[in-house]
Length: 471
Ligand code: ADP
Image 1: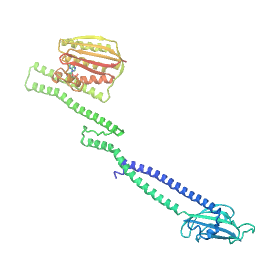
Image 2: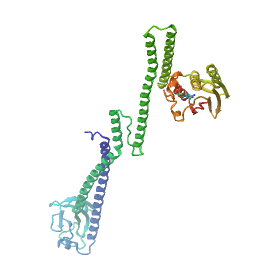
Image 3: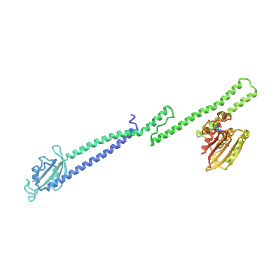
């Protein structure tokens, strides 16, 4: 049942039907072409023979009567004369030739004609009749209608079509057998080829089913060819790879998010339990409540950022693109950060700032640069400095933020833009970091058609560069 519904079967069936029609057409053509040729050449030979006999110097009548033509296998020669309105046949070979009276009469009247007849023995004869006039009077036992004329009649030459029938019968058998063998071999070959050609499809279906059953997205479809099916398998493999990565990211994200939220909750719980254990002084209660408030703030911060990322992932961000003077936006953000820098004893400087206009979402870009500035302040010990600059490079604006902070170890650099990734977990958390800031920066830069890069040396400082297309 499965095989009958398979593409292999349908391919092979169609192929056999088309091949069968072609073979039948070709065979019919060959058969009828040959049959026509053989019958034509028989007719030609009869014409030639009739001409030869009618012009024969040797007495035709004597030859016929003496059976002179009997040796010629398959040939019959008959003469017919009309004597007093009676047709007198002089047949050869002593056989009764079932000549058509009509063709004899027509020949006597001067017309040549062909006819095909069956003998009483079932033999098929092709006959040719032509007018015939006796060369000498008295040789034949008839009197001409007009006594002064030589007796006239009809010469009928006939040959058996047995040879032609045999040849055509043989050809028919050869064609039938060879066509059947061709169809059988072509059918087997077709199934073999279809099976080979469609094997990759089976592999794809099998692997997909296995992945579906086991849920193991690390499996890949084997790619053995570079044809259309090979490309399909490669495309599916790429899709599975993307799904696998997305799935892993999601698992990691869920784990990280719950871990991030559990930590401040655990601190709040511990702090409250401790405060409630016994009566405390007002100062102790105040300290406990401050800790609880701080951790609640941290949680709310994480939840806000998580919501922003979830909205971004779902494509539900509300961004309003407009022309923005990037240099002004940077000065604005910097003035907010300046207070924080002073609080922490950091020097804040402007490098060269060019006038650049970009198209973007004002609050999104503001958040991007605030996140970067907060990080620089967070990870630069007091006494350090932070420099901000803006330059044009081709059709891109490059905003750079350089700090002389703790820097990032080289092998950690590729990971810092990942969600919840922190180089020093304890330090980041203590400083109010959630591990989501740079992931949000990267996302904002990307929706603006730009990117964020970092260059950093541990212990020496970092430079974060934001590239945005100029409006
Ligand atoms: P966090 O909230 O922990 O700062 P981010 O996503 O903003 O999370 O940053 C990820 C990690 O990258 C940080 O934990 C920190 O280790 C590192 N990092 C970010 N900015 C800087 C910087 N200016 N200097 C040194 N390290 C940085």
